[in-house]
Amino acid sequence: MREATGTGKSVEEAIEAALVELNINREDADITIVELPSKGLLGILPGKDAVVHIKERFEPALFASEWLEHLMLKMRNNARVGTKFQDGRIELSITGNNMGVLIGRHGQTLDALQYITTLAVNRKTPDFVPVHVDAGGYREKRRQIIERNALAAKQKVISTGRHITLEPMTPAERRLVHMVLGDDPEVSTYSVGEEPARRVVIDLKGE
Image (cartoon, rainbow, N blue to C red; front, side):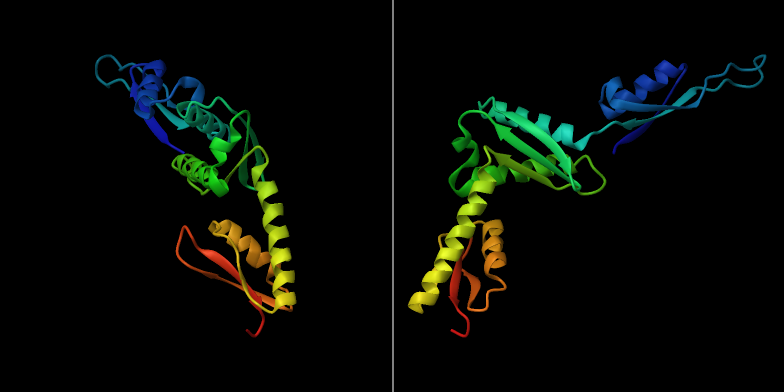
């Protein structure tokens, strides 16, 4: 959270100096008057300027949603963003038309939007705040597909005795496959290849 101290002949002048330094509006500031101005005494003692301390008022979830909506407008997409702050994480849900453009192949565009939104938010916060971005419920649907495909591939490996290499996935999707089959007594999983074509292999244990 950014802070600034302003001084001036009056309290208003001191506030304005601090606002200019932070480049924020008054409604985005928490203002504390540190010292009121005073006049000199009979020309012997000098007067004192007013001193104020200002902290930028920052709501990470609100900033994240507004920032993401502004970014999508630049992409010529007027989708809306729903916001929820849960378990220390900002959850942004995009709704509207042309969700496929925002999701991209295997969610790659969505992952990029999540990454840069996370960077934008955490440039303004002292402690890291994770940001999760979804569009049209894509991530839950994708999770179900990955889990279903992993379990189906497992059964095929068991029935044929031959390993199966799944399609290329993002790191988060590969972790999901490893988690789904991690405790399975019959098969094991490992990753092969280089990004962005890295894949999960499902094989019989001991093979």
